[in-house]
Image (cartoon, rainbow, N blue to C red; front, side, top):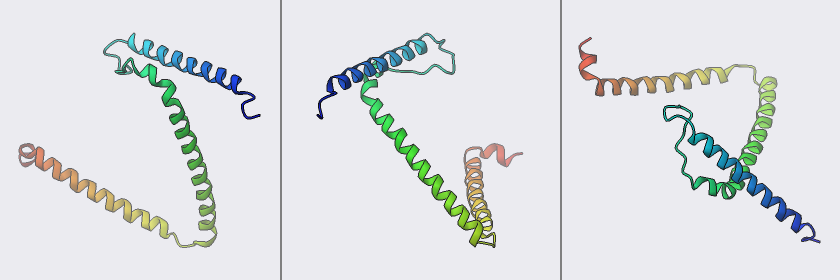
Length: 127
């Protein structure tokens, strides 16, 4: 019973693999015909076409996993947001976000100022 549709699955997998080869080959050919100064042109290796059937299960698994994680996080956010609206009356979250944003911004500005003074010392000292 388990192997009843095995021939159909093998044929379907073969056709899907050929379809992936065709898609990867077509994309490689279109990319190769682009002008060298085209910003959309990328440097693909020709062997990447042969790796397409082996990498698609991992990419598919990754996309499905990311979708499930995003859906769960969205549901958790909705539940927490509803609880926050009902039970929390003082806007401490906005005050906390303001402090965090200022702290991150101050550190970034200090680091950027240090880099400017370090690398552009002649221009910074003589305005």
